[in-house]
Image (cartoon, rainbow, N blue to C red; front, side, top):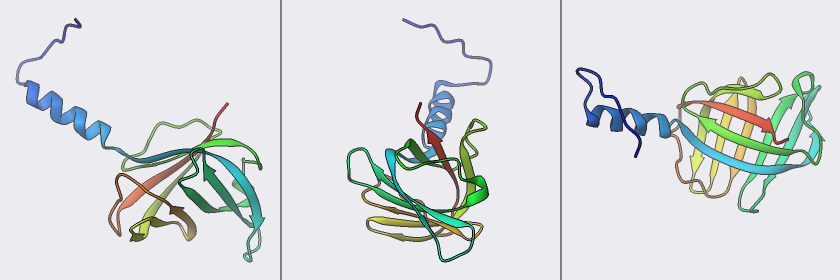
Length: 139
């Protein structure tokens, strides 16, 4: 059994509350594959189409070609966070705002670039919530 050192003024309920807050930071996570990269009608903007590994979620993500680090066929992890997550220099991390929520879809704007997530999600943020969108390659 692991030993836990509890400092003066820190109760077990405080530790449980802090643990719950940390675990709830991640709103959504999906492993998938970049199915296609399409040209947008907006110059120098492309659309990444990502399908989840289990086939239940699809993501369409607008991204400027200067920050495009993904290719068709790349295995990726897309996650949404309430607070700034740890990231590597080869990850994409954008700060956005939830623009629209429906039963099985979510629309996020990252400075005007749209991220659309379709499919079931366990937790859905509210309209107007600030979220971090992280997209990472799986090695």
